[in-house]
Image (cartoon, rainbow, N blue to C red):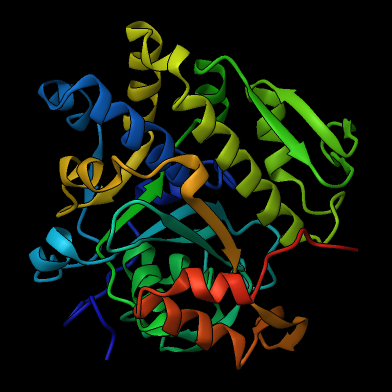
Length: 348
């Protein structure tokens, strides 16, 4: 039984997903949560929330009966963040046109509401994907295929089944905008532990700290060939950009500039699709004590990055350490798990 998605009937992904361009700003939803919702809505006051909330698109993702008031009042929370991707170049592109979730992140907010853990699930993880009507009969596949088979609803069901975690909300990156957000905050500073070379523009970022505008941040977050660890390097770079943008958004200079803050909030709101029952005011209240320095990042442990499957080269999640991480999340003791499993940058 999938926790948090009782009786969910999955329908094919709405056409708006197919209208989105490419990999589309993979971790935008995460940037919005820790940058904009945490600092922005709380700071400007809830009297202005309707100005931004009315710009957010809503979809029925988790289904009815999944909102747990008790968890929102006092328990830890788990929020799913998806960044959509087209299926161009996939071996089964012709069979399943549409999009995949290029980035899949779980945000676990602890019961004390003063810290959060961002868990990146490799998009090629080979897992059980539940059935989706006539689109998909169910069975093992890459986890990012769930988005193509049944949209955000099936992606959420798949993640809930994999982790055993109840999901308290879903946010999906829409159209545009890491570039716009970074430019709205007048740039970010990202410190790389290794050299990255863009296969798109030829730009090279040596190991060290770099001031990036929106275009450069966009370029960096795409890379998976000129970065150590391939797709795992891209995941790590996305996490670095997330942290840098969150730090920039929570900076005093932005929060004391109503015009700049309004630009960031407006851009963020117009870039989100969220679950129908996710109350953004409640979310902002939950996150008001979460600061960038209290956010930790982890990638689900894996044992094979080149597992040969009918779906192509996939990632085998570690059969011991991955379940242990999921258990730590369920029991709200992920800090202890991270202390015993320190995270390091990917290596070639």
